[in-house]
Structure formats: structure tokens, C-alpha cells
Image (cartoon, rainbow, N blue to C red; front, side):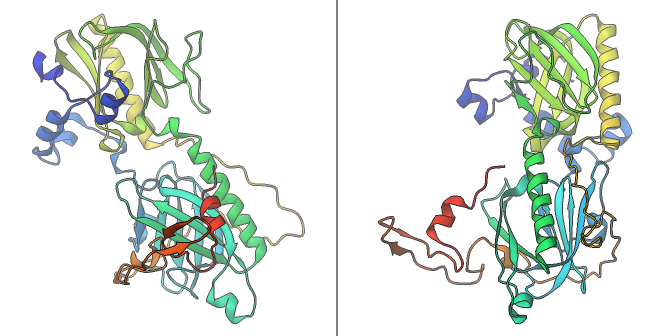
Length: 400
């Protein structure tokens, strides 16, 4: 348990300093102490559950174990398309593409241990362009390919993936599905990300309810303990998140989805016993303190939040939904499949799967090309890759 000075000496993040927002604080001291404890400490003592291990929508991984390709709780497979070629990394090899509400999954048909999983949070753009597939080139035909540009937030490395289908009907359906899910993911971040000073409170002081969200409890007279005097506000607990906003200024608020919540507990502060919400490292490791009276109500709210937190992570609501268009009578019925594959992966991996997907014409081992003068811009730029024009560089990022 921290003493009074510990509770008021958390460091402000860079974004807080630059935006003048002193409401939410980091608890780096607590995380450092917890890191030295046995791994089973929280299981035995606090029974913590959190969304820290949900990586599927936030990472790009290659050649993973087949168990990691299985759908997790809350993940829904939207479509599955056979005979899709990973043109950039495995040109000429066909595989299966699966689209879920969290990621894109591709694995080779002849060698399933060769696979890719691309989280929607890493995808920066998608585009349809002419294919460079060996299979279509050998048949003397050309197909459209789906270009997927991606970048992990923790790295500066950019990746480019090219997926080619065997016919235009499958391509059209796959590209439409990918574009729709990408837009749905971008517009539903309130389910998955911590938000500060948002516009989720109406002018009349009521919460803007998300689809599938239900209000469990509303408590007034809750003090936020970020300032020396505290800020009086309203606490709203739902089945998806915990929300607090100031009574005198509804723009002074925070929304904490259970997917970002690391722990909820009661701790000592200079204001007395306080409810403390600690967020995951991927959401900034914030510590939010609230004073709730009487103590009986504090205990009741703590148990309610902990129960809702655990229940939500057993069956998460990620907010990404998709309704497929009805199939026409003359369409092929075997192009889109919603069944999940359970493939067995052999424990052999490609030596360097990353190099094939770097966003550039050269791989990691090639010599980087020197800049060339572009008369249209009047500047020296990196050589444009084959199949692209200068205009493509301005249009390749499509707004979702």
C-alpha cells in the first residue's frame, strides 16, 4: 500500500505535458515493484485478469504455431477464401485467406507452417492493383491483387503484403470484406482504447451508449484525485467500460474499456481510501484514483467492476461487426467459407520471413538504391517501384 506522498508523485506522460492534461497519471513505481514478484503472485493473491495478452489485432506475426491461428474469445471469422496467393512472400504458392474481426490470416495450402497474421490495428491502407502473380502470368492472364500496407506502432518498419486470388469474383468479395472490416475497426476504437477528453458525454450529462453496451450503475459525487483539491464528477459503469466525467465540465472525462484495464483495487491516498484503476502497458499504464463515499459503496463498486472486468474478458466485445451481402442464385457457393480451419503446423520455419514483406523494392540484404532526380517534383526521391507512378504515392493511403 502506498503512502500519501507515493500517490501524488506519479510522472506525467509526454502527451499530458504537451496537451496540458494533468488528470491521469503513470504509476511506474508500482509496475517496477510488481515486475520483481513471482509470476503466480497475482493469480494466488489478486486473481488478476487483463487484456494484456490480446495481441491478435495489434501485431504482425509470421510462421506462428497453429494454436495461435485459432480464434480467441470474442474473435469472429467473417470470411474464408481458398486459392489466395501471397504474391510478395510466396509467389506461385496458393493458400487460404481468413478474415476475422481482429486480423487477416493467411497460410500456404501445401505447407501450412508458412503463415501470416496481420492485426487490423497495424494496417494503414489497402488497395486493389494489377497482380504480379507468377501463376496468372504463366497462364497469360492478369488479375487484380490486394495490396495491404502495415506498420506496428512500436516499430518504424513498414510492411507490404500482396494477395492475389484466382478469379475476379473472389477478388471483389475479398477486397470488399477487407475494406469493410478495416473501416469498422477504425470507427469502433471506443471499445478497445482508453479515451481522455472525448465527446462521449451528451450536453445533458448522459453517456452516449455504444451498440451492445448496457449501463450497469451510475454514481454521482465521485471525486477524481488528480488535483490537489480533487474534481467532483459522475461515475458510469457499463458492461464494456468505466466512465468518469466532471459535473461542471463534461469535456473533462475519461473512458476506460475493460480491455485496457489491468487491475481495480482500493488503496490509501492523502484523500483517504480510494478506488484505483490501473491500465495495461499497451494503453499507457495509467493510474486513475477516485474517492467514493461511504466506504460501503466503495467496496460495492470495486466488486462490481472486478466482476464485470473478468466477465468481459471471458467473452470480449471488440465492437467490430460486419453484415455480408446476400448471395445471388448464380454465384459460386464455394468462394467464401465461414468455417474455421484447424491445421497442424510442422515445427520448421522459414529462415527470414520478414525480409520478403519490407515496404520497398529491395530486401533487408540488398543495397539501398540511391535517390534520383524527379523533374515533376523538382526533388531527388527514392526510385519508384515498378507498377507504381508518382500519382500513386499520393493516393495509396485510402481513408477508412
